[in-house]
Image (cartoon, rainbow, N blue to C red; front, side, top):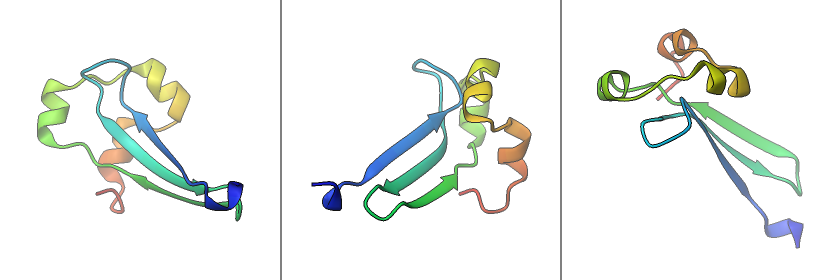
Length: 73
């Protein structure tokens, strides 16, 4: 049954409706494959959204890291 399972996970800037996505990951338990991508915040997200230090402590990503990472989309 695990052969067909794929897990999708998003990390967010904050809990609640004004949080925005900061990372997405896909894991395949059967093969231990994991891919993850950072998501660079848009200008709108930065002005209308919320950044929570509590969420940052959970996912371990700072806003400066997201802004500086050239791989982020």
